[in-house]
Amino acid sequence: MADRLEVYRRLLRRYDLRRTQAKREAEERRQALYQQVPRLEEIDRQLQLLGVEMAKQAILSPQEMEQTLAMLRQTQQQLKLEKEALCQQHQIAPEAWQVQYRCPKCEDTGFVEGRPCSCFSQALVEEAYAASNLSHLLGEDTFDQFSLAYYSTQPFAGEHGSPRENMERILSVCLRFTKRFTKETEHLLLYGSPGLGKTFLCSAIAQELLQRGIPVFYATAPALFLQLEKEQFHEEEETEANGFFADLLSVDLLIIDDLGTEFFTSFTASRLFALINTRLLEEKSTIISTNLSLADLAERYTDRVASRLMGSFTALKFFGDDIRLLKKFAKQ
Image (cartoon, rainbow, N blue to C red):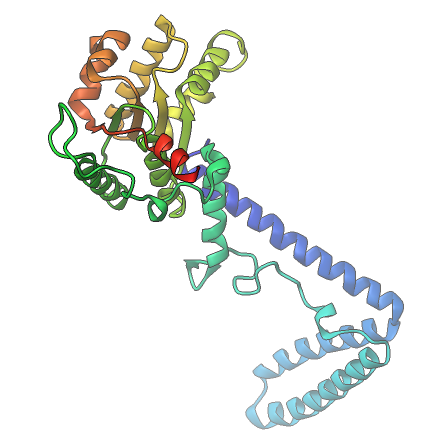
């Protein structure tokens, strides 16, 4: 995991190496051609000397300069024609002399007229995906694929409105969260019964932001706290300042899925509070999904965790029939 600035710098270094490699390969090809046809090297050397001589003529009087330049241009043209004939004779393609950049548009600089090239923007997206822990969900869970069709339009016992109306509201909040991400800091708590689309929406939000090159880290609660425990108790050489926990604090969006399914200890509760509290103070957005109720969250993770969740997060309650089961039966 890395923040945007670190990713940006890493990509710039990669592009610099890529450009250097392309130039080195071009020079190696040129030297090989010189060995194959020695006269080509002589012609290139003469052309370089002509270029220097033509530059010198700029300090002469206009009449003298024009006469000399005409002679130099004629010699230059003759040498170019000879070089072209030799290349045709030895079946040397024109591109053999050129630096073959991966992206001809930006010539492997990453920028065109001071703006990021499309290849650089795509590389940022790929870097963000690689660091997000979401590569396995690439293209599967997106807002375009989210369907309200399985949510009932009938009133649901003990709730206000129907599951369909509730999901329309939740979807609207998630879309707004994604759209305003770079302008506002917001936190979402998705809670309620399993199988209603909480993980799907977490993934959809993540992928939408990743496509914009925004660093996101997604993890299920069991995997996340297991890694934190390893760092704390089994990797003594790794310090908290530059380890996994520090990365969780700094990433633009942290998504903790299935909170409550992890093996619970006092360490889990303390780390969860530190994550939530620090990210709130540093205005870093967080999304948490859980099958637990608000009351269960307060009982399991202590009042101070619950107060942060209920006081600073937008709570979105999911209710209705299990969508995964409905989809399963629909396929049978």
